[in-house]
Image (tube, rainbow, N blue to C red; front, side, top):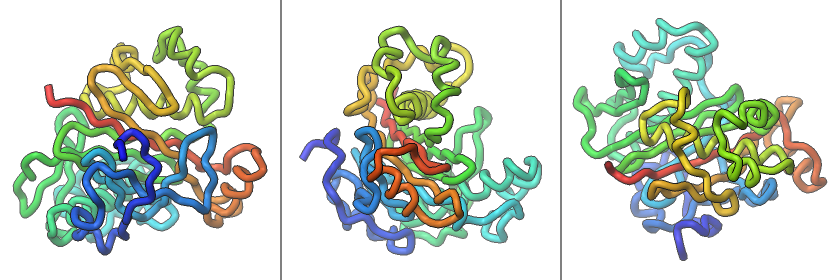
Length: 281
């Protein structure tokens, strides 16, 4: 099957089994989808807590409710704890959750213990991985987090991942003239909130892969050519999925499934997850 189809249920594995992921998932087959949650606005649902492969990249998304809180974990290295402790409490919580998830992903990829992996920021803020104190060659990382979820992606070339909650759709529309061209705004239209959420997530994932940031003119330089399936300019490959947040009452994604089946609004915390692979420049 083609990479862009992104609908085949592959043999996704748990994080504990991630060291076998290269053998478990055929190269360039699509990620495992969450059949318990119907697709939202044409974006298939991605199963949380599993390592997936798409286009040669490894991807995992997890709900923040199952990850560490604001206290820096003892599983962070001294250098990682130093970065975490310099952050405000709200930022420290999501930073810690993202790094721990990325450490598990890198450890599975490298066949190492998670405690031997460090994920530290470059001068431009982008993350990079070290194993045993040495940078891992040809390993590119990207992280994203919201108040409800965290995602990490790893690839041999430039990669970007981004989560955009569907409740942010109105905010995306308000800044539309800054981030989107008239043609892109017509693609987004006035439909379900997943449209603007996906458009923003794709743009942000692309500028993460480019390591240019979302401020200034960078988002406008990423051409959004389609949403179903996602298509970007500049030789980039892209995919997008629906990622269910926790139910409003604090439960699992059951509330999201019920809302999707009924055609009603997404559950709080629901997001569109975008993955972008950029060419090496």
